[in-house]
Length: 102
Image (cartoon, rainbow, N blue to C red):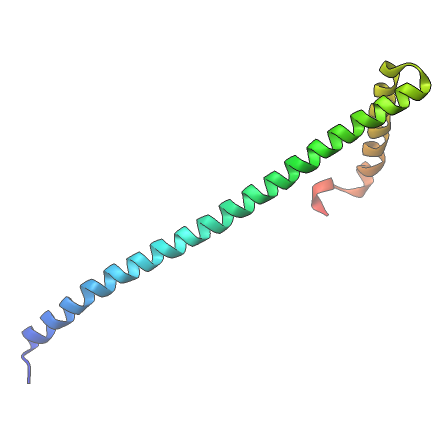
């Protein structure tokens, strides 16, 4: 039978690699979480950017088309802006609560 000293040394010798492995595992878990969050953020931002660019170009196209039909293109940009102001006022009325709280 082993002496208590030898048993303790054996236990400490096997605990050191276990601690290193556990630390490496936690580092890899943290790296995985960071990667998931970063890729999700990049994907969402790129979709938002593409949607915003589409909306901008679409609105400019509508304004130019209406300007061509009405004959004065500079007035139509004000009309389109007023339309979006009315939509914003209608959409975010004070009695509906905070718009991001839905």
